[in-house]
Image (cartoon, rainbow, N blue to C red):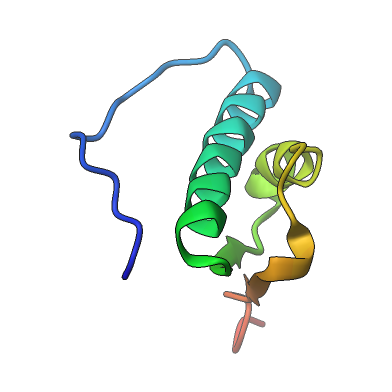
Length: 82
């Protein structure tokens, strides 16, 4: 069984990259907690771009996410770039 959000996508605007990262990290934390509650384990693909740093920092600070039950893959999109 896969956790799939049942609502339509929501667009939100934030005043800064830091604010966007905090909001995105909090939302990802909510989804992770739901999946862990529902399935016991979760798998996440994380982006390697520097633009994702604020989101990854916020996600790493999320409370009540049992990271021992989360498998993370770090997507490296720099392959074959000069």
